[in-house]
Image 1 (tube, rainbow, N blue to C red):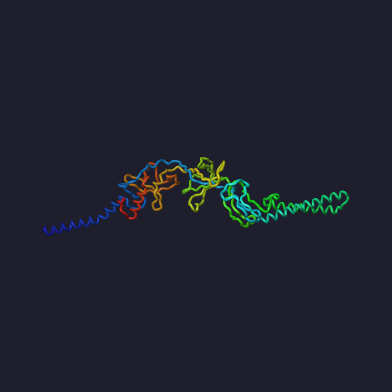
Image 2 (cartoon, helix red, strand yellow):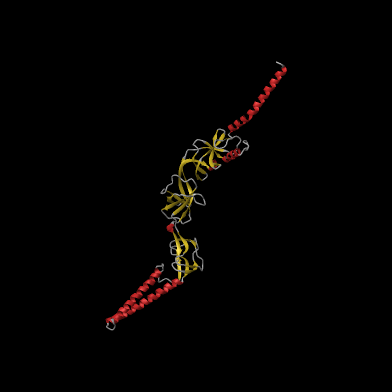
Length: 376
């Protein structure tokens, strides 16, 4: 073959080989990146090399858990009372401020009441008339027996005395129906504590005029039989109405507590589940006393809260596989102090990142956003 022709053939062959290599390069890069785990979502494998600050732990066997949660003693409906006056009047004095503990029958505030003065005057007038007519009837009875008086005058005196007695009885009942002792009633009335406890709030001011039956304040019994408890989601699965658990106070005092109902909705402010328990036995705490309730929880895996990370709204853990870690979604349960229950997603014996998991979370987010895969 002509040397010139042979050289031309070799040149064309070498050019074709270089072109093929250039076309194959992007495919090889993609395959290499897939091997390193740069695809999105679950199944992303992150290299653990050169990442400092990680601590690993082996998932232990599930265990039955229970935790103490903060709660507050409150008075039930029977321990609360509305303060009111049975008569019209004007507030002349407030003797006990809200929140101050008082005994049963202690004076809370006083009213100047023209209505009460009129009722007392009516009763005194009716009683005086009754005494006078009964005296006249007794005199006519003596005259009639001595044949010095007529039957007609005797019957008239008797009828007038009966009417006077009825009027006095009506005036007396008018006072007693308002909870007042006729003998002790006067122009000034004191509203008293219905039982030992404290005023939670007043709805009156000095010099204010009030109507009969108007709500003037609220009173709370000194003892609380109800405990209000709020728990984070999810709700304990094995806690049903009627379940008896324990309640305790900071000084060591303990009670049995019965769950009265399970919540249907979340509280509007804390977005937690609100439970109501009744304390069994005594002596009971005062309303507002901080308590703790022991809540029985399910038998589950328990991990430190630092091991759980939230990636795009999904809770999960980074499971170690060789020199790599994979983000795996889990079902998060109630918190146990610095730990948290994991209801599903990991198995005993697996190794997860316990501390520093947030570093892997940042790396995964950076990869998904197109950052440098090797920027740790």
